[in-house]
Length: 314
Image 1 (cartoon, rainbow, N blue to C red):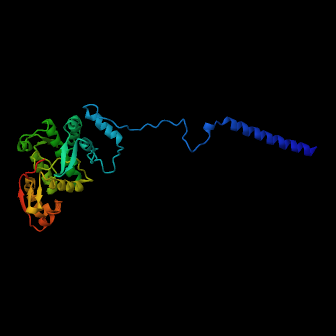
Image 2: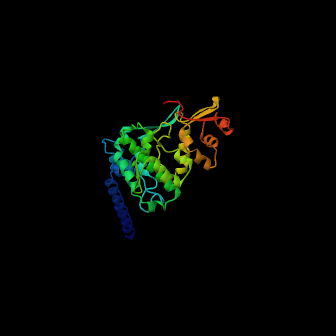
Image 3: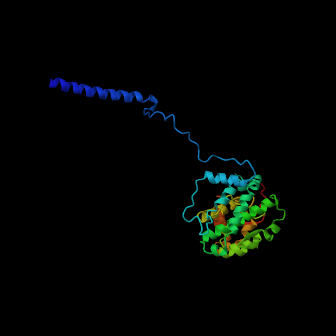
């Protein structure tokens, strides 16, 4: 009897376990079972966190807001001043993006403007200029050299762009435009473009590359750059700017077969600064000229330099 009872208990426990297993399997639907070959059918639809925005109105602030949303930007240590000014000049970069662009052709690299886009972004440009104007001289004086120089270059370029927009990109008298009073406001003072260079940039640095990166209203002047200068890229962009200016045939034309170069008067204007930097004019031109046939002639001082319009038209 004891053996029979023990056997009965064992069968009963086994039967109960089997019933529990069957019930569990019946409750589990096939679609709920793990399946690594397909995603769960109830997964939430993925929606991009930042959708590409189109410029649908003349309010450029919405455009810049869209760019700011698309770019996951967090200021790095050193990007902000104590007053909260962004040393990368990101706002100006967003304004230039797609509105000031480069074109490579047989004449070299040239800068082109998109007038309608720039007009749309005028409010954003004015806001950027206002952010520059809020910086006080006392705060500026505490910055490093690269921060100061890039700030002044961008101040010049942004006011230059604003000046063009206000005149519908038509400047009939370039020399008068450069000397026009109140064209540029900074540190609570008014400047012409000329007086700004002599009063602000020249005391800070006499590096000739700076002035050969600045646009003016003359055809022979350097083009407006489509990149902003900041404390990180200043050295690199100064070199690139001079290279591109030197190799723009509408401004500087090298004719190795004639052993002659026709250079922009802008280079002649800063010859004194070039010499003060420890270079002869010929050495400076050779350094930034990328014409392979002309470089040996320049280094050996076998090329004649002339200054004036190149006669090469777009």
